[in-house]
Length: 131
Image (tube, rainbow, N blue to C red; front, side, top):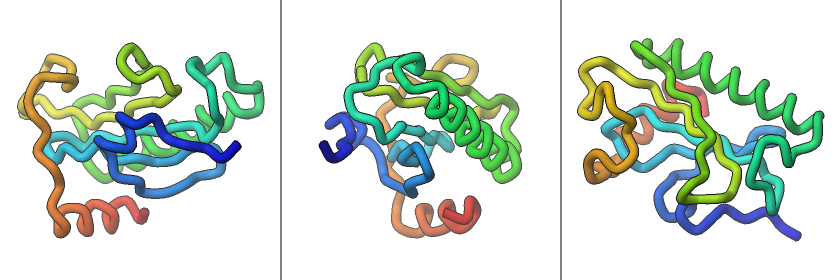
């Protein structure tokens, strides 16, 4: 069966790349540098549902993305979380947080309506991250 994203992720995110295991998504909310890794494995809800090799690959890709975000955005804190309460498909959020961001110190979920990226913002962001 071909891999497919959960409808909510499809609707709310921009696909940036496919890495060896994960699809790299950008949450279409320009208020925060907010990225999501989704293992391209169907019917997986929890990290422990992945094989041992897939779990290792996920953490390697998470580390790669985290380093990219820290190097490019120089955040005050990186938030990395796999919640899945609203979207059960396994996905791992990576959010560069800043003390001056709109939601600080609260979580970004549901705090404010999303502000979509425009074409120029997307171009710059992809260039910064080499994606």
